[in-house]
Each structure stands twice: as C-alpha cells, then as structure tokens.
Image (cartoon, rainbow, N blue to C red; front, side):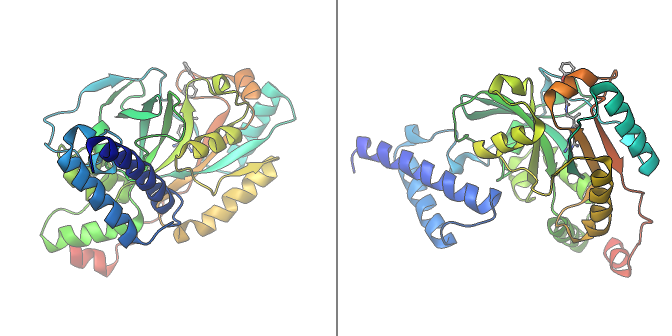
Amino acid sequence: MDRIQAEQRVNELNELLRGYGHAYYVLDKPAVPDSVYDQLLNELIELETLYPDLIFPDSPTQRVGGTPITNFDKVTHTLPMLSLSNVFNEEDIREFDKRVRNGAGDNIEYVCELKIDGLAVSLIYENGQFVRGATRGDGRVGEDITVNLRTVRTIPLKLRKSVSLEVRGEVFMPKRSFHNLNAERGGRGEELFANPRNAAAGSLRQLDPKITASRNLDVFIYGIGGDAESHGLSEHEETLQFIEALGFKTNNERQVCKSVEEVLAYIEKWTEQRSNLSYEIDGIVIKVNRYLQQQELGFTAKSPKWATAYKFPAEEVMTTVRDIELSV
Ligand SMILES: CC(C)(CNC(=O)c1ccc(Oc2ccccc2)cc1)c1ccc2c(N)nc(N)nc2n1
C-alpha cells in the first residue's frame, strides 16, 4: 500500500471507528462485534506507526495523551456558567411556577431533566473538532482539563458537522464503576472515595490522563453555551435534539411538562425510581422550554429566573457492614 492509499485508508478507518464508537458508547447499541472494532483499531495503529504524519488529533488512538501534565491552566469562560436556584418542596415549586407565569404569561412549557450528581464542564469545538474542555470553577474561571476530558469515550473528538460551538454538561462516574474503584482501593489499603461525584472530580483532576482514562467516566450534555438562536433553535428541547444529532450524549429521561402538576408527577416518579438508575442524581432540573419566555424572565445576579433545581431530601446515610469492612 503506498502513501496515498494509506491516507485514504486511515481516513476511512477514522470515520468507521468514530461511528462504531458512537454506537457503542453514546447509543449503547454496538454496531459491530468488539473483535471487528479491535481489528480495525489495530489496522489504524499499524498505519499510524508506518506513517506518523497520518496521526490526526481526532483519531481514537489519540484519546489517551502521552506524558502527564504538571498543572492545569486557568481558563475564562466566554459565557459564565451560572448556577441554579434550589427548591425543596411542592410549595416552593408552585411558587416558582407562579413567578414564571407572572413574568412570561400562562402558556408555559417546562422541560424537566434529571440533575446528574457529577461535575459541570464546558466543551469547546471549532469546525467540529474538540479543542478545549474546562471545569466550571467559580462560573467565570475554570481549569483547562482538555487532556483528561479527551479520555471520556462519550465525549466526541469530532462532531458529525463541522460546527463551532460550546456545549455544557455533567461528567459523572457510573455507580458500578464507583463501587469497583473503591473495592480496588480498599484492597490496596488506599483511601476510599465518599461518593461517585468525588470520585469523578478526583479522576478529572489527575495530572496523568492514563489514570483518568482508567476511571470509566461518562457525560450527559445539557445545553449549548451561547445563543442557541444563532443555530435557529427556539426552545430547549429542540436544542437537546440538535446536540444529540451532532453526536453528543444527552439524558433521555427528560420530559416536556405542560403544567406544574406534570412537573410534580415527574418529580414523584424519579424520587421513587432513582435507585434503579446506573448513575447518581441529586435532584430534578426544571427549565422553561421556549427561549422567548426565558428572555422575558431573565436572570438574578447568579442564576436564571427561568430555571430551578428541585433537590431530593438528603438520604440518611446507611453505612452498610460491607462499607465498614472495606473502610478498615
Ligand atoms: C440553566 C443552567 C444554569 C445552564 N445555563 C447557563 O449556565 C447560562 C449561562 C449564561 C446564559 O446567558 C448569559 C449570557 C451572558 C451573561 C449572563 C447570562 C444563559 C445560561 C444549568 C446549570 C446546571 C445544570 C445542571 N446541573 N443540569 C442540567 N440538566 N441543567 C443545568 N442547567
């Protein structure tokens, strides 16, 4: 195979492996057996070894960086990453609904989303390429953790369209990975992580991407940073579908609610169901769906007036015998 043929084949393999990776990790629906994926990946590794100038940044072989970094640079978010106000009971929720209707009229739709108990991140893409990832930090200034976020298999290195945009989401560690990690750490006499959120934060703060890559982190993208209108989008649910079509992983348990009664029913459902989820959630996010109505409502100093988070009551911590065994 000459260099021209090698370049064609490398581009073909990158496209194939990106599609198979998306099906496997993002859609959880493998398109080919693992053996086929591995065979194609080995073929790509061979060609990249023969022709190093054919190693592209969005190649699946480039997810786990080489040398550990020494520190994380500070980055200033182009748009602030705001926080959500909190509500704790039905009365608060009805109060929020009343304020929304006073400010934006009675024809209100909400989108309810599971509030993932992880770490908020900002992901920036230029012409479809993942170029920078950062922690939320204080909402204005975060830390550049691009090399670590590249190891999260559900974060695409290249989008389906060559658009430039910023998305925001929550990186988390699935419950099973958390328990396995703590069992390993317990076995090695190392300190245990208190919960999956701390484990995810600790994994993203690693200076060696190889360690981050071993922690099986995942992500749910929940929004676009910046004016979604510039993409011709008029409501939050539409934006999530746009994000999904680009190749991002979003949380499918979200629901459009046409009344506060439907919001309360959704909260009731997930208060009971959350223990069956493969990841931890600490509440339910309620957002006004239409952007025009969001604009009518505006912001307080640090939070949108068109969104709030219902927080589950703190669970009494059940320290099981197993936890005690592992912690000694
Ligand atoms: C709604 C928002 C606060 C994001 N939105 C923003 O951060 C934001 C930021 C500037 C905006 O516009 C401005 C532009 C310039 C100046 C000020 C605001 C608008 C929204 C938020 C926060 C946390 C969330 C979470 N944990 N889970 C889900 N599912 N959704 C969440 N949504």
